[in-house]
Length: 102
Image (spheres, rainbow, N blue to C red):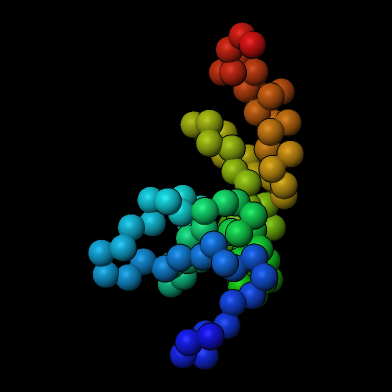
């Protein structure tokens, strides 16, 4: 690799904002202060949060984000889950009225 860069498994979808580059195609952004990585899929962010940062940040909220990276986007809910299936189940059962008829 060029310049001694090292890519870890799961990090191939990472991006960092530099200059005029846009991260619009990478909506899953790391929320750790000072980290500007973003990913195309939630799995990339999850891997980054589990392996790219220390487990205990000293901030309970940040630790929750690291261990439960999937957050409900329904306003005033914000529940978090360890995996995407947990979030899907939550939405299908807790916010069924928002889904509409099938």
